[in-house]
Length: 520
Image (cartoon, rainbow, N blue to C red; front, side):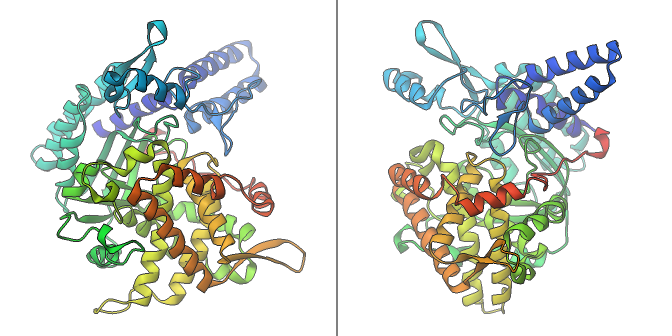
């Protein structure tokens, strides 16, 4: 299948983007494995085979929560510059250079360029289509062939694939194709996300797009609840904990949110490595979303497996036994849905000026603040609908909100285990410490003396509202200093007990490794 081939190739791009050592570490391991097999050294070959699998799983040599180099004799950690900037580059290096060379600012901060060292201490930029040409050309060829195949049966999807291929091939901004993607009909049975989209790997400026692919088929179950939530998005915006003048009324924005359930049948690039994507809220372009809205897409098959193999075992280490009945798969799914919807809540522009985006002010801190905001407002979303049920009837009971609180609290540890320096993890550490500091969660001892978290639900509610207000205020003002302060005070370290719990979770998988049928 053409789309499947394009998705598989995208893994090579991300391998180069995640770090400078990704491709070379795999090539050297393959060479060593071949030699071990030739020498008949089965023990060494077995070890190298496991090493090779791990390198593919993590997208290079850096793995685990601390991002440690897994290769023998190495002790460095995930480089902040990833593969987007020269080795050893710091944010200060780039910021200072831009001040000295403002004419290069736009190119250096472009989502689809890589930065390389030039002569005399200068930098130059390389378009992704040139930097990753050996991958881009076959990916685009596969997209074109898929578009041709689908032209009669799914003309809108076909047109999107042709256009996205052209944008990638010529390193064009994805804006126009994002609009085409937003206009794909609700009845389209399959969908495709492909391109340099998310910016989490860039820890220098937070602007470079990591290549990803998601191929999925529509799942038609449970859509009734999702459609009800979609209809309430404007009401939620009008009730978020922020000054009313900064809420996005219908008169200010005609954006809509499409809520969709899918079953993923192939993930590639940063969607599959080092963690499997559960859902996404796209596009990321504020100019597109202001006019056309967002598509919130959830992968039900991956969600269910993560609950079974990861979140349930985590909850038995973190949550007091008498509270475990509040940890449910329904709540895990609900928070994921509400999280993605909540990305659309609140201001996208500083002081609603329609010009200065929040992301441009917070730069590399934006993802942590935004992910924390979406998590926090997901609780607030559910809580508001519980306290103020719509005219057509109750959506959430108090019991369901309690389940939402406890299940997501346990899930904070799931996300933190990907590495406390990642954008999602920092947001989760902020939530954990804030909720505890405000009495929403507290430690209790079991009969055997082991500590677990229990909960005061009214205080949990209040903590969620106060944190939501803080995060929204940061976004309203584009206040980088306030964001830095919040992260420094609440998002940097864990309590000794929380750290002990993380240590006790070492036998629980950090994530799932999925083999797609056609990859076998």
